[in-house]
Image (cartoon, rainbow, N blue to C red):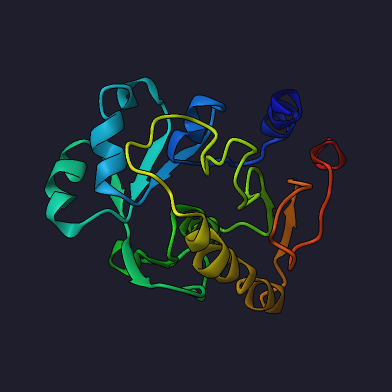
Length: 192
């Protein structure tokens, strides 16, 4: 899958890595995380990332993140979109995004960055055969599969109608995904 991502990158696509996914695609434009714990677990390897950092993490950490050059977005609501007319908003004070998980927030962030087409990579929202909810072993707390099914996936699927209402195109490239509101396409069908 990564060779196809590099082909898109070479064609000028912007990539928002969510949490540990920057390790799979270190050329990502932005690394977004929404959780102080994730930052604590990973801060030793974060200097290796050369893109921009964006977080919705707790306001108590804002000065720490600002000192490191991170952009802070206020998590404005649990579900839906924060819609900015025009895109992107004219002032930094309007940096607000919505979402009950980092992937949901990254979709909002893509709107803030002016995306017209969004491609979801790795948004399968189901446990692996071994029961793990993450592709890596770095989360030091267990993820609840029911939260994915009952909260996270419905929240992301709920973005389809407002995104289409804004004439945005959004596709899912994970064939086993439980997200059903976005058309499936192969990564190789995008780009050049």
